[in-house]
Image (cartoon, rainbow, N blue to C red; front, side, top):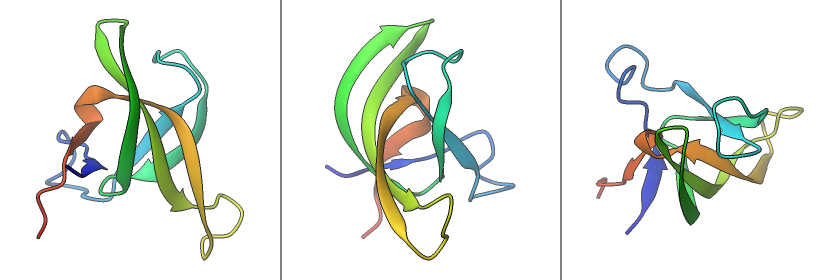
Length: 88
């Protein structure tokens, strides 16, 4: 199975919503990077914290300093912001 970041709340109005990739599995944690809804992710770990399911992921996204280069970031995302990629 393949997974992507996906913001259900904003999908109809802004399909390229930025999603925070956090340092720790909590909404109070520092966002170490952002990635667009639709970016593929690899799930590494799952925990329950702050009434959320949190997923530790690897996500490939554009570099903060150079939008033409890509980097892989490891961090935490709320589980409700990840979905199975059903594209062909």
